[in-house]
Length: 76
Image (cartoon, rainbow, N blue to C red; front, top):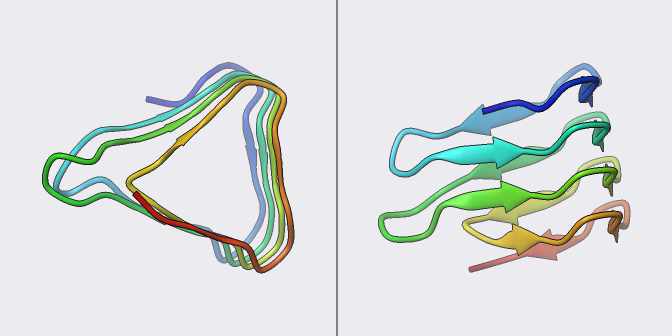
């Protein structure tokens, strides 16, 4: 599920093959970010977030208005 005005730069990978992925409105996902899930661990990104270049998000929850820095790794 992708919220209104969410933006994705080139090279972003979104894999929701195991669990759902929810991306909030007005969220900015920058180049080469990878987002995926694991069984029992959906991925939820709140509204108004910025996900920095080359971040890796794996089955986690990111609250509203959060900044995930470039190259960050956030695991379940």
